[in-house]
Each structure stands twice: as C-alpha cells, then as structure tokens.
Image (cartoon, rainbow, N blue to C red; front, side, top):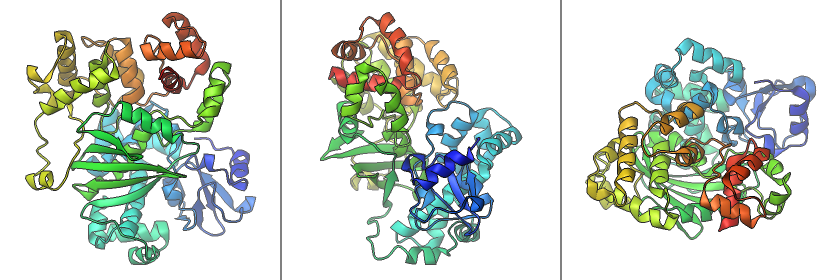
Length: 485
C-alpha cells in the first residue's frame, strides 16, 4: 500500500478522525505508534514514519500509544470494499482463521500457497499473516485484561496465544507494560459481569445515522434470531467455538457491544462480525460525497448523513436464504417463512441443556449443513422456492459453492443454481459478501424509492442512471429503500 507522506502528515497535523485505521503514525523519537487523530503534540517530520498496519508498526519495534489506543481504531475501510486476495485475507484473519487453522488453513481458504500469500500481505501491509494475527491477539488480550477478572493464563489462551510466555512477551512488546501492569491501569471501572460476558466499545468513523440503522434491522428482524428493543439490537451468533449473543447499543463515537460467549476464544471473531454487521468500518464521508453529487440524492444525504448498509454477521449463506425466501413477497410476508425454517432446524449440539436453561434467548442463523436436513414441513410456498433453498444448502455444505471467495466468481456460481436469478445473487453480494457496488434495478422498493425522488423507475433506465453512483451503488440502494418507506 502506497502511503503519501504529505497527505498522511496533514491528516496527523489536523488530527483528522476519518483517517483512523487507514494508516498508523510511528514516532521514532518516542518509540510509539498512534492513530492519526492522536491528541498528543504533532511530532516533527523527521521523527515520523507511516505504516499501513499496526502489525507493521509493531514489526518496526514500536509500541502502542497509551493515550489514543491505536489498536482500538476502526478497521481500514479498504478491506471492507475489496474482493481481492488481500482484502479477503484481512477479513479471514479478523475472523480468527489463523488462530484456529494456522497460516496453512488461511492459504487453503484463499487458494494460494503460503509463500505467495505472505509475499502479497508483506507488499501491501508491511507484515505477514502471522504478524497480523499477532497484532489482533494483542488487541484481544488488552480487552480481556481490562474488562474481565480472568486470570492471566485464561486471558492468554482466550486471546489465541499458544502459551503464557508468548502472551507475556507480546503484551510487553506491544504495550510496554506487563499484563498485570496493564490491568492496573484500568482504574476502578466496572468489570464485565457473568462468565463469558464482556462489554467492549466498537469505534466507527462518523457520521453514523443511528435511526436508519436500527430501523433497517428491525424491519428485517427474524424472531428467535434477532430483535430491536429500546434502542439496542440483540442478535444470536454462531461462532467457531459455540453459540453466543450480543447486544449492540449505538452511542456518540462508538457502539457498545455486550457479548455473551460460550468460549472466550470467540471474542475476536465476534467483534469482527459485529463490526461487519453494523458496517462500522465504512467511510461514510466518501460514500455520502459521491451520492450527494447527484441532485436527486443531495437532500436525503444532507438530512441523514452516515446511512450504513448492515450485513449478515455469521456467514453469507444467511443472506442467500433470506433472499430466496423474500423473492416476490414483502419483508413482512417473508418473516414467517424464515421462522418456520428455523423451527424445523435441529438444535445446535454445541448448546448444552444448562445453557438453554440459562437464558440463551437468541440463536444464530442455521448453517447450510443444518438446512440440508429440513423436512418439507419447514417450508411454505412454491416447490421451486423450497428446492432452491435446498440446492443452495447442498452446494455450500458440500463445498461446491464457496461464499467467501471473489465476489464476481461467487455471483456467477450463484446464478448457476436453480431458482437464483440476478436479484437474488445481487442481494447476496450486497448483504452477504459486502460488495459496496451492487445495484438492484428490478427491486420493487428500489423502483418506488426512485419514483419518490423523481428518478426513472424503469429497471433498464434506472440501471443506466445508477452508473453515476459508482463505486457506492449498494449505499444508493439503501437510500432508495428509505425513500420508499
């Protein structure tokens, strides 16, 4: 990744929060690295180096600033909008694939050799997959140290470290404090209560339009999986080591996430999935600037800056099932179809009877292998729709269809399945894969929204008109959906 020194230095000098997560500022005279918005005095030019990742700064021997906490900055929006190997690798590392399966597992998921993957990540991020995963483990460890009463050995293994010694060395190198000293700095704030319950703050780039975010989620909420209550979004999660729940409450400058986990090793994946769910790593200023250049959208953007596009948190398969069951019916009509499917899925074997009795009120969306076994009674409506869901589930469960690959390739594979057309494949790409540049010209709500804003509502004409909204057409869809409400 090319970092222009002058542009980066101007961002640091102005303490511009929009660049947090884009790059990191290394100060050679103090031996620390910071986020661009760090409130400390701007360092001299000759003492500054810029890094594309926290791992690269750590690799240069720098420790994290205790004042601005660069490890807690929003993620780079670049990984949010890229479908290439590096973008996919960053999303998988954030989901803990390296901790669970090692670099060989990551390389296998991406279809590249370990050597070539290391070379690509080094070229773009200044660090290989192990260093990037190590930086994430350090961040997870800090959260556990400061927000729980766990013993240090428990923290070490929950954060993904292979040994307590490795944990101690990494924390000292990254934060220049021993783990016990880091815990002492937390003051007398409350410690998360209950086994497996942790509250963390998820930073985002302002602005964030909270009303549109919660309305979007409430309108599509599936009982038993998710709900919006008193300004908080509650969601069940299917995590690598067991089920979990999260309560997400937007606040000024951050989203409060209270996570209840079966296994604390799932903290980092849960945080990454919650960020993805709420689209917290987006660059709303860039999105809104492009959309506001169109007079038809200038008013809505000015009235509601920072509209996000929520994604499915656990796996893109959820978006695909939702899309198929929503074909040619309203969101309200699709909800009972989804509930019926869920009630016929077998209970998660990872959820013990004790946990069921202990208040796990929400479950994660079923995985493909669970949906494959759903009987006819779990479906309502046309036979073709039922068979489309089953064909999709068999393809994903059997490994014939990968939903974490290149976006264009995944869309082609989806279109080859029976019962899946351009609208369904586009919806999956937008909400399941996170493609920021999808347009749905045949969507009835999109056409109604276009008509309400004085735009053409003929699908072909509207599709051609939407070219001016590239590369953020998915966000234009979200705006048109709101205009149609």
